[in-house]
Image 1 (cartoon, rainbow, N blue to C red):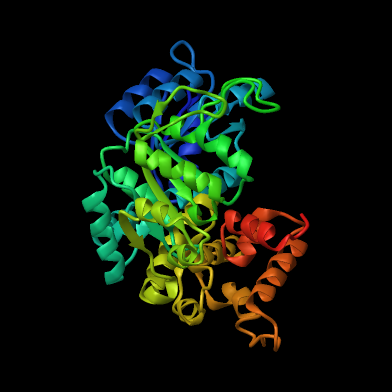
Image 2 (image 1 turned 135 degrees about the horizontal axis):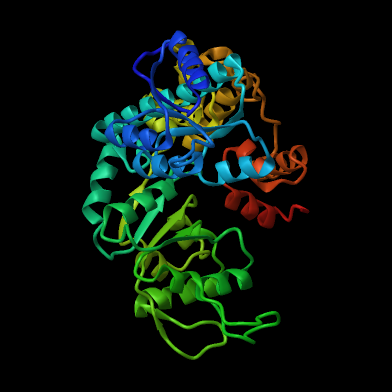
Length: 451
């Protein structure tokens, strides 16, 4: 155990107070005691404690819930457990509602106390390690939530910082799972808009009529079912950032409407006549080849050039494979904290396996793989055995492409198979395919897949 963890026990009954403190000291923790609610508040104001065990009733001064409120105000990261001899549903609800992590009934079982403290401090230890890692990565390899040691990515980091404060439209290109939305959020956060709205919309997830209303809003009576005025994404974004994901999937009419917005910096709600100013910065993203779409007549050339004022092209994970160990460690630590799992890192044999995988779903697929390993592992470092599901995948098993089958047909079959296996769940199918939900929606429409 770690004697650096500090625990405060506050109870007006000496026997209860000292016995609980003795149990905790036997486990190796530094323990202080308070004989009243007032003393507990004074001690909390004087120095920090990681865990507080607070008796519910400590007459004549402040009771447990009052002490809880004071601790939450002075030490918001501290864990508070309410101890009571009067266990009722109302007591539990009040304690948890006011910020207690748990409540225990007198007389406390020493083994239950030890297990609770061990579990709580394990999570706190992971949170500290994760914060330390985040700070180190922040100094060396990160931009917002993106981590990389790849020189090409660092060039992108510099570009994002240089243009974040400008109003110019940005087009982010890259395959699914490369982190386009993370770059868009970094552009928003690094500039002067960080305190303003960041509004995202997937252009592939909605039918044309719904997408039009989603972007521009509508007036009452604009169409059947429009019972009241509704603000669209451009209006909701205000002077912040609007992120148009999968911009290559918008239909021709909306391409023209968006071109007008970019040219005139104004728009009109559906069914309305009043021109509204468009003050937001537009950041668009696509996993399609827009230049090829322009050449094929599927995307307006004038809109492409309006969007492509500042271009950011994200490399695939295969092009920045030196980031795999860094990303795997980053995801493992963060997910261990989020899930409460006792994972400390990624072992060398697991990293070797991850480096050998081809990651067609890019960073998102890697994150999903690490999450699955974290959730199913028994703790400690993630080992190669925790990633057995990768070795069992069709790619790693040497799956052969059927002869004479076009790529589009293979894509259609893959989407259909993923939908069958997930019972039609779009999010699960997207995770299985290593793409985002909007891409699955787009493929469903493209191939006319029943859903």
